[in-house]
Image (cartoon, rainbow, N blue to C red; front, side, top):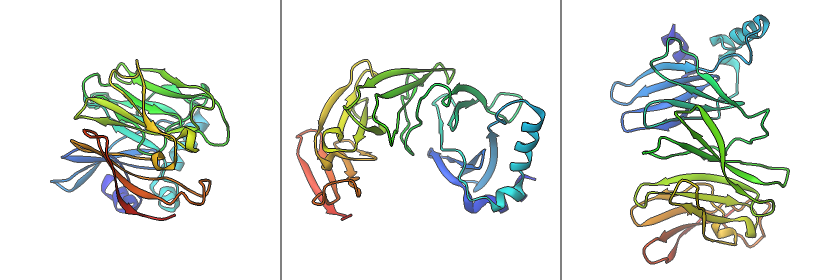
Amino acid sequence: MINTELTVVKKNFLPQFSTSEYCLCSHDHFVFRYNYQQKEMTKVCQIPAKNNKLLTRLKDKIKRSWLLRFFSTSMGLGHVVELPNGTIIIIYDKIYRYQANTNNNYAEVCFDLTTTDIYPPLKNGIAIHPKSNNAYFGEYINGVRRVVRIICISENGNKTEVCHTFQKGEIKHVHGIFWDKYRQRFWITTGDNDSESHFYYTDDEFKNVHNYCGGDQSWRAVSLIVTKDHLVWGMDAGKDAPANAINHIYRLNLNTGERQHVATIGN
């Protein structure tokens, strides 16, 4: 049955999380694992129906059928990551967790985003601390100006709480959080206006958050590449940016503080 489903949905897999041995992918409400060496894909788990009502579960079963998934254009789950201890965290309408030693293939609900007014992160915006086993993400909010929060998922996915708050007007939203194994810190990128575009960092899991640099569109970055000595990023200046805000790629030397222009991408 799994092989039949994989033949149908393979073209619609969305890579979510990768190690040196395998990649976690999603399709619809399912999580799969692809083994690089064996070149095999296996189903790991899926999120449950919205509630336990018979009609809801029946509708969910029909929607999850391979035939309807074949015609669906939805990519489904927004975020799938794996903690160092192997627990899988899924962020969709709710926060789910899945452990391989459970007796079923369904992830369990840990936190409801829809009833707590917490916004999910931008794609690839979740970072994991390799020692504490905690996952962090920042709210990606559009269309409204309000406080923006950093969320910590701890206790093996069982606890969700706010660990830092940007005050209203400080930033529009968080683009992403990125683990820096060389300096043992998290980097946080924000946007979108000049005054909202900054790089922040924390060395103590958000007990203290520091503003590294920013203040113009050149610091408006969605994602970071972290190396031993550098941060590398591309600007994210879109239609809402000033006309002269041409997108570039930068490389910042963290030892000297020198920022090098690598390439011009344009808009």
